[in-house]
Image (cartoon, rainbow, N blue to C red; front, side, top):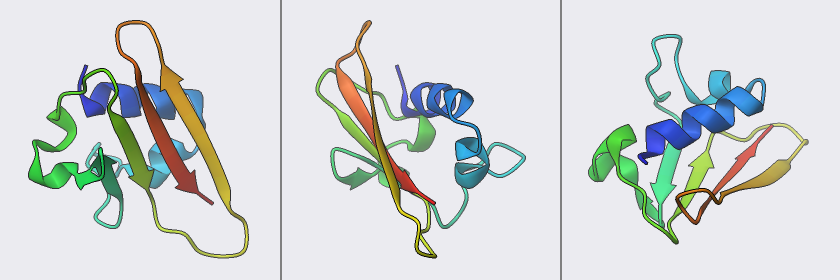
Length: 88
């Protein structure tokens, strides 16, 4: 799988997440950082960055206000990696 497939799937299961991460055209918002194993995917293939077993993808939309939510999603079927995200 690639980052785009997993983030899109996660967004479909969590209303509002996709709007926080992507523009209506499906482009990652300029203020959102997506990291694979601590490295920004902007430098490694963008949303087409491949994922392997053990990879961790972190999503960082901007944070503001006083409400903080952190969730973790793990995928088991063909890959064993986690996606973590923090958003308001």
